[in-house]
Length: 180
Image 1 (cartoon, rainbow, N blue to C red):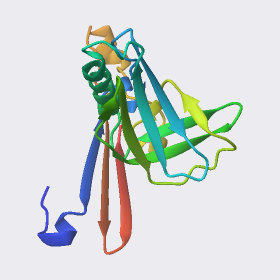
Image 2: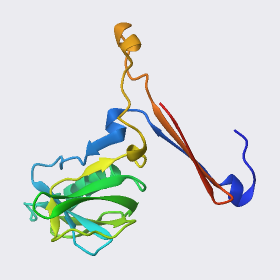
Image 3: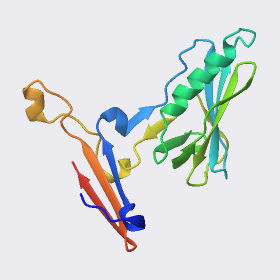
């Protein structure tokens, strides 16, 4: 692929979805049994907060443990990906992640991180959950997650179908190319 210098050359974006887990996944649970995680998203906001709390704050390792788990959870979220936020009570909404903050440990085994969203939430009340479902940034432009073709499965292989997404914005013309 040839690129041009400057803004026109920087307008090409390639995104690869190489597995079902890359297409969609649930945020991981804390690895420390003393830790709990909670996501809170408020109506009218364009941010959410992840809080990881250690139930044994007097422990010498509570701060480190909550920080480690908060880092692992935020590490599973990527700018551009979509979150399914809400539940059957408050409604659900897809919101695109614009950035994921670095977890900060405040004290007593509590770590927090801010998740910034590209759009405002229109839920009827606060959405609180111990995890969130994340989708690849272009999930809604393909019919399904990558899989294994029948031919490769018969030959004993796996994972030969990948989804590539190229996006370019040249002279204000948006061009999409999806290869499956």
